[in-house]
Length: 189
Image (cartoon, rainbow, N blue to C red; front, side, top):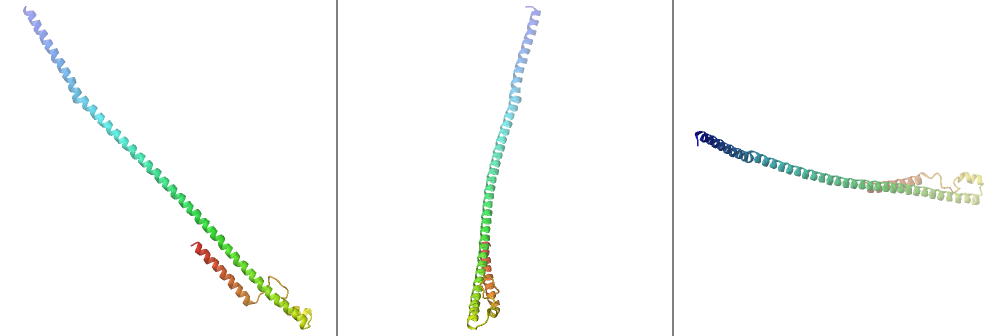
């Protein structure tokens, strides 16, 4: 082996050693990059994605809870509104019935007043008719004189009553109307 061959061999050994060192360095640099840079980044990305997923799930859960609460609140409000409407309808019906009852009571009081007035007129007319007949028969006066003396001898439902009878009837109808009003106030406070 000549010196040239030895030199060439040495150079080849150096190149071969350098190649092996460079390959080992490249392999360790690749492994280092993978374990020191790439893997932590990927793990951090996974952690971030899990956090975002949990936050999204939690936000959806809160949103669903808010929607459910809004639906429950709307249902409660609807039920309360229906109850208020029913109460208002009942109250209106009760007031209408009370008003009808009050009007009916007033009509009965007025009918009683008219009936009492007519009865008083009939009593007075009956007495006047009796007196008129007695005037013609027992006193032997003419019909014209007796008619002037007893002008109310014809039976009628409407007549001019004496002030005391008229006052009594008016007082009775006023009491009946007040009783109707008190009864109506008792029903509708």
